Image 1 (cartoon, rainbow over the protein chains, first blue to last red):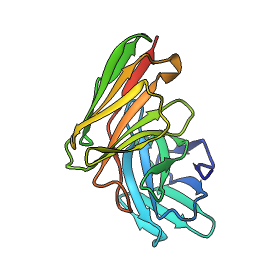
Image 2 (cartoon, one colour):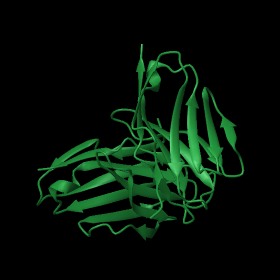
Image 3 (cartoon, rainbow over the protein chains, first blue to last red):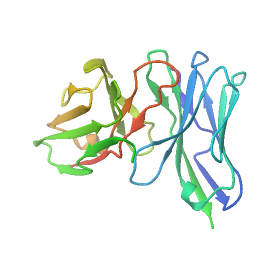
Length: 111
Length: 115
């Protein structure tokens, strides 16, 4: 079956550095992608999304890059802060409207 | 505050008990979802409701029974659960079900433990 997955299960960065979290997807027909952040004891929180007709989208301190050629998605966090420590999930929107989630990457920020 | 509220936050029950999980969304959305989140597994979609009609049942055992009385409320009725059903149960909603620009907004979940 087709799936969304993450290259790195854990990522540790120094406070103030930039973070890059990667995601590979296999469904070339997916037209919409979302990044979520999940803090301990909370549900996934929407961060940023991107449609397949774009290759880059920026938010506040976050940037999502989409490379459809290699079916790769990344989330860049600028000037990472301790409050960014969480598990990050990418998700792709399949044709029926359901989201398929990856397993997640845990980001730890060292002060 | 995500606009999606789940109660209770924690639930411990025996295998013969009957309980219900509740979800309420204050976003005016038309689609609502139940997910199961287990350790070291991706989020698993259980049920989808669109305009109060169940549109998807993702091969979920009958011991889980959803109910959507109106577009703002979603319940998950539980009975005769198994230990492997212990997990975080997440509710989500989106404006409509399908298409781009339809992010799902999640509640904080109910942590369910089966004794």
